[in-house]
Amino acid sequence: MTNNPNSDNGVNPDLLRAAIKFNAIALGCVSGLLAAAVIFIATHVSLAKWGVNSGQYLNLLGVFLPGYTASESGAWIGAFWAFTFAGLAGFLTYWSYGRLLGRRLSESVGVADETVDPVLKPAILRLFGVPLGLSIGSAVGGALCITTWWLVARGTAEQSNNAALLANYLPGYSPSVVGGVIGGIELLFMVFVSCQLLVAVYNKVVEIRHGKTV
Amino acid sequence: MAEPTKQDRALLAAIFSKMDTVAMSVAVGVVASLGLFIATAILLLQDVPTGFPIGAHLNLLQDYLPGYMVSWPGSLFGLFYGFLVGSVCGYLVALTWNFTHYLALGALLMKAAVMAD
Image (cartoon, rainbow over all chains, first blue to last red; front, side, top):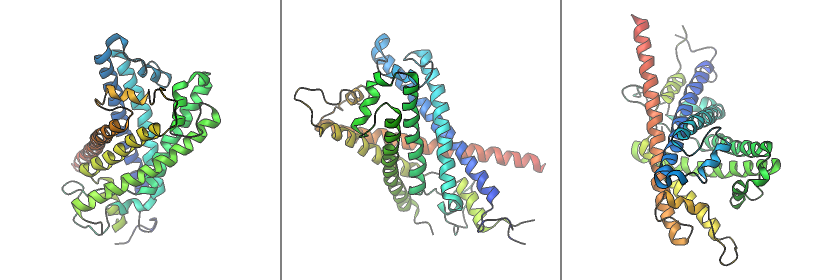
């Protein structure tokens, strides 16, 4: 019996790549489904509340989700685009998270736990704050930058008063090429900090419920 | 044939590891709760002329979160609703993540069983 000669410090690089791809697809499906559900439900809540007068602000999403309107059929179109864009973002988020973690991905469950069985006794996932913050932050910051540039490309940036309101939270942001970059960087930082808190709370609750990773 | 290393087995365990639904629910709830509170507070702390509407757009959340408004008492509702909505979202994320993995694991086991025949 010999160890895999191609392994990187004990981890098979092909297995690592396959693992990252598998979980990236999983996160893409998760984020896509949830985003689609949010758009669908929010549209129907708006329709239920205001009927034909609904969508005063929701209709603005049609700028980014082609064909979307606050209507019965629009809800399905919006759900489709939300699934597509959020799914892609989720895929890229986990892909970058996995690449940043690398072989440390195996440390998220503890090598010493020999009783782990993926079917009968699956391990409990732990998270890593810095890679998670960087990957989600990049995805969200990048999304803000791209959507802002889209407004500029459409020629409607100067009329985008609602987008300009983001400057309340992102000083220096404006619906412009440079403003989009500034806002994207600031949002990356804000999301990074939020992820540190999220991971700290998640890992702490897991530690309380399941004990520390060896 | 190369024997899988301990790290390979750990990596496989990590791939199919469960996301703790309670932990994710609490974590996202805490972040969302603080996020909505801070977003409200930032608008309230801004210097605006008397009579000028504050947070006209954030106030639209009232339609989905009864009792919430861009005011200091309303921000407490924001803390509560932020935690409620965030924890539901966190729970759904963890549930969907685990379900997706169970489905994939089931498909892999079935494929392995068919190939073994």
